[in-house]
Image 1 (tube, one colour):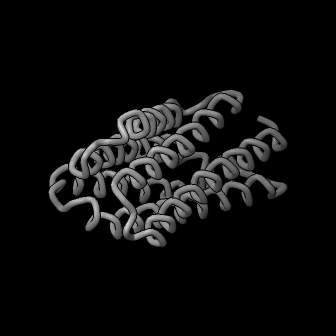
Image 2 (cartoon, helix red, strand yellow):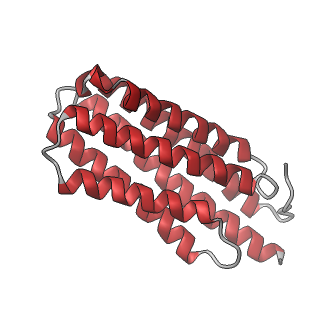
Amino acid sequence: MSDALVQQLFKGSGTALIVRGIAAVLFGILVVVWPGVSVLALVVLFGIYAIVDGVTNIAHYVKRKGRRPVWQIVGGVISVFAGLAALVWPGITALSLAFVIGLWAVILGVSQIALAFEVRKTVGQWWLWLITGVVTPLFGLFLVVLPGAGILSLLGLLSSFAILFGILLVVSGAGLRRLGGSSGARLSMG
């Protein structure tokens, strides 16, 4: 694989992660800024965020040439379905919303862990994806096991998760863009 192709691949992947990270941070900030938000508004915010996250992941998968990790598209499809479910059934209760978000996070986290192990030989900071993959299902399991915490008490946790997840994605994306910008991008960094 030529250095130019490798650099373009890392830059594109980095940009996709940065877009996903920024969307997650914005979602987290909106939850903090509007603490008295109704369940309906939170459902809509989550639905939009999950769709943007999923579409960005799918678009990057489709645009990318050559060998593509299947877990990337799996995570994208899961996010789009979770977002559509939230938008199609906006009247769901807080308990149902906690369950939907929890289930989404568990499945997405497992796909992130699989993706991290798949790219560990080509991406030097693969461990950031692994951390994201571990944090995500832990958050999801908390929501699935203890959904009775209520959506309003969940706001701080949801916001913290989204901001942490977003920061990890932005840092990972910036690292990939730097790797793609270096003249001697190495394929085996870790």
